[in-house]
Image (cartoon, rainbow over the protein chains, first blue to last red):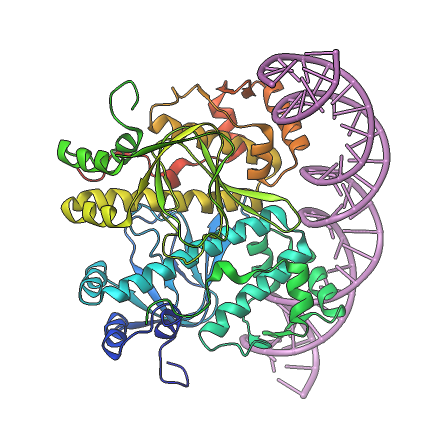
Length: 244
Length: 244
DNA sequence: CGGCACGTTGAATGCCATCAAGTGGGGTGG
DNA sequence: CCACCCCACTTGATGGCATTCAACGTGCCG
């Protein structure tokens, strides 16, 4: 729960469907058994066969895929209110891993409970499908970035996307936000070396665009930053709620 | 329909769920109104607000995302039996475009019909969710390739994945297959320049691994190719059907 | 026969990885 | 309390992989 007394997931889903009090309690019912996990632990590992889905209550998680040569590609980061592993419950073996970046709090979601929730609150299922679709759109945009953008643009785009996601759940005020990621995380996510990420960050900082330091990000010039990022937030679909 | 008298989509879904005769007819019912589209046309364009989903009956399609600077990133190719735009029916605006690579035959799927099909054939819905999950896993693997693999490895991986997908619907005999893609398609998909794709293909050909030419691909040395590709087909989940 | 799309090859440039070395803060243990 | 280590970050030098520019080949089609 944050300062408004509303859980992050309710807040996020409300961006798409304005949930009734009753629907909110259904969601909260899914989050009944929170579990604490320390930073740097794997929730699900690549190749694992029967794994659950989770809702992230607090803290940050990354999903990644390891290669034989030891390098890893981070697929996405999860912030409070996001689902973990919902995409792949139907594949027999998980194709990627989840690791806690910070200490986290998660609720395990039983498939049966989820289906029951869908039945008694159909609008809720629409909201959850929207959330899943948005996550996929983010992976696609991520692919575009890694495939077609230069390093500066890639880093700028990443920070802007992050800001937008965090603003949605009340963890950013559109200027600055807390961010527990290291430059190594950025490197693994963006397909760059950590050394180069460092150089790019310095460049962006000296250009007065954005500062990424001490677990904190400040966006000094959103316009110029969005410009070099080629950032267009349409894919995050963050306009008015569709269903009221 | 192919030579076995079974549509590509039924064949593909059967890899996950062995469909009864009745379930097969439900699927065929979804494919009632086929539409022909010439090569090089857009079915859905990025930014379009209300678009349908389709099932591809024959021919090849690519989904891509355009950038301001004119470059494009191909997200994925669709081959017969694949869905188009199912992922994003819930987002208000499509975040990417679909273009026919060859002349194609598609069936438009009404959301209502799909839901009705789910209700009268629950096993079918599981199979479709599996197909969607597999598509997402492919996008993730694509991201890993673009982010973390060198050009040779990327091209090799792409060709192996393609072969596996086509074998599933009976369009490859595990050695060679027809492939209407140009080197420009590969370049846009793999985040490389067309010139470099050409060089890589020459290199792979001269090494006796694979030939990509005249709309035809021959895999001469699958073992060595999988080796430099770092190819592990687990994410395609192509083992035994799960539900019988 | 010209035009066009696709493919092919060479040379020069440049972005980013890699190697290497060093800084600084936080935690631990002597 | 200080020495030590470890991790994250920082910076410079070097080199390689892939892009870009440019030119040419080749088959197809109007």
